[in-house]
Image 1 (cartoon, rainbow, N blue to C red):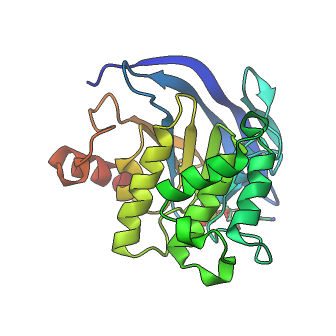
Image 2: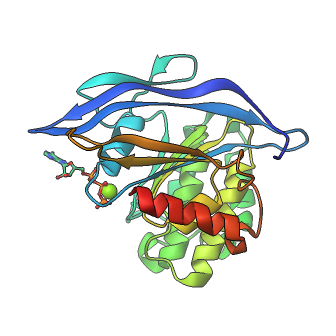
Length: 263
Ligand SMILES: Nc1ncnc2c1ncn2[C@@H]1O[C@H](COP(=O)(O)OP(=O)(O)OP(=O)(O)O)[C@@H](O)[C@H]1O
Ligand SMILES: [Mg+2]
């Protein structure tokens, strides 16, 4: 197993329930701890997997503070209840301000981050280079490809400086080449800061598991209404985390099969 320690709690979900006309989510309990590795700025990457309609997007909204649970709570940063705006949220359709250029949108995000004061322009240029968008800063979102929109959307959330970044289906609608780039980019983000924590909600089991340290499977249990976390898989313990060519390995594929069987 790769040498690491799990330190303080960064996010805690306690007894989260969500009920509309029926129970959607029940008894959701988990916590994300700060993982440290000697010599590496290792962030956290957690994936939530479940069948269509099970409640992933609802849980995503609760985790990001955009929706209150019926009962229970989600806390971050030393036990404070999460509220809207605390986390960087990247929706599936990469919502961007269509009437602003990429640079204008990014500047707006950078201005929200006090830690960047006076270095906004320089930081945007650095990120743009890293994300291969230098030549696109003065374009409008309609002039970008899907992959470029996605990168702008991620840059925007990174510039805001939140440690938590939630992504709903980050791999959908990307071609094979772009998919590899998106995977690479998310890995890069997760290694950019010790406290950076990505929470991915996805149908794409292979790609999301390949970059995660922990997987939670959301599902129903017999005789009970509402979805809960049926299984937690610690990929570090299985020696499946933080390895570049893990997708080709047999034990990785076995874990994928195990997850599919649990859905
Ligand atoms: N406002 C609402 N009122 C009642 N039920 C709702 C409401 N919003 C969502 N639901 C129900 O909550 C359940 C979970 O929906 P959710 O969007 O979280 O699913 P999901 O797991 O994200 O699915 P997918 O993978 O297809 O995106 C669904 O059965 C849906 O019908
Ligand atoms: Mg959904």
